[in-house]
Length: 137
Image 1: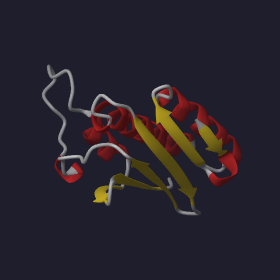
Image 2: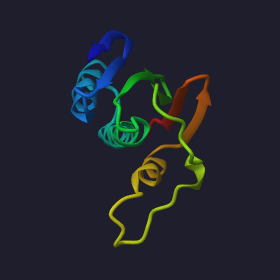
Image 3: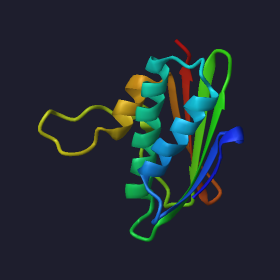
C-alpha cells in the first residue's frame, strides 16, 4: 500500500491490502479537508469502501488486483477515480438496483448510487475506471 495524502491518492495491491486501507486513507484525507461536512464524509466513505470492495471481490478473478484511488476535493464537489487492472466488468452501473430484502448480495453499486450524484464505469485498454462524483452539502 502506498498513500500520498497530500495528493489524495492511494495505491493498493490486493492481497495483502483490503478495504481497511481505504478507511485509513480517508481518515487522513478528512484531516486535511476539514471543511467537508460529516454527511459528505459518511456518504463518500460508504461509496468508496463499497466500490473498492466490489473491485477486490469481482475484478480480481481469484488472482488479486492492483488498484489506485484518487480523490479530488473541490469547492462544490468531490470526485473520486478508482482504477484497477482486473477483468472487465460486465455491468452497467446505471442499471444497478437494490435486490429484494432476502438477497445476500447485489447491493453494492445500488448503495453507491444512492449516496453520490454520478457513478460511471469505463474500460480503457486493460484497466477498469470508475468515477464517483458528489456535490458538497
